[in-house]
Length: 415
Image (cartoon, rainbow, N blue to C red; front, side, top):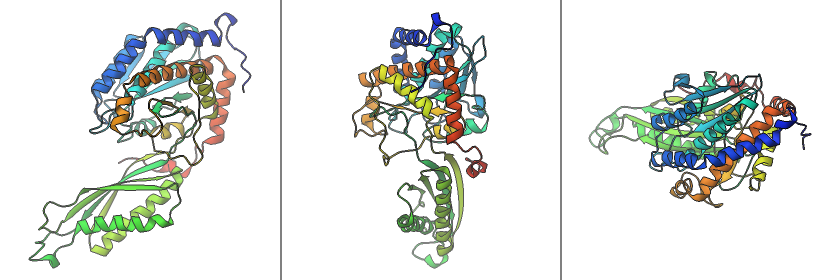
């Protein structure tokens, strides 16, 4: 436990400020829930979140934030900033808001974006009592494309001292990490011909594509348990009686760390190259994006855990071998101190990216998680802003857990 000695004037203690942000969020709860449901009812895919971005950015602007839209070359990204009168740390709340194809908000990004907005508004309500800078950062395309990856590379997070967001799930967790992930596309080029009259004159690009899958399946027995490789054929030809001169596939290559994921990616690319050689085709590999493995800042995670426990949640940390996905918040956590806790909106066993999870994202339980997420983030921000010793601990944690000189950082993550 930390020694919690308030470092601001006694009449405006950390405890009082945390009570005030909770009270304010209770006052605007109906508005926040309405925003969440509005986003859910109007899902927008990655890089197409124009309506949702405008809704959140306009809300921030209406509460006194200075809003910059279309940052990092992304039309649906924004940064809303509120500057205090006195110097202090810069705290960022991260809003995600893209939906999934066909399923809509089956990952609960309506909750994520609204909770971050609510936390920012709560701190704005006590702006006169807080030093430092508050930012609400709208980040598109978490599901496909990696908006945060691009924003990190463009320096959007360079002046941030701590970043946080909350993801809906099936239990309350504060330290759960993610697998590092690479998206890679393959294009195979062959020679078309009549499949019956002149098959010997053709080079079958689809055969090269299928053989890539077979090669990867043979590779699996020589990989560690943390590795995940999955792919789809995106183009397999146009007609059965024509030898396909073009085929394509898309793969996700994951592992426990960024370094490990790049090692596996090289092996996957060799599988495609070998398939091309075997069939006489040629292949082009396109490394689209890299999601780094996410690192939860220990001090921030502990503070969030204490605050959300006060709100009625029971923190249950993940098991050592618990299954994980990937997120572009990993890139943020490798750049600045960050947390990405989870709050339950559905029972254990209900998977994200399903229609059941989409329904939970606008349920009474989902609304409760939204409000608790906003409150816990705002309370955690108050802790960090009003108690410099805690912010110092956050920085020490970051220095101890993140290698800013890691070799993988030299690679470009999207094309």
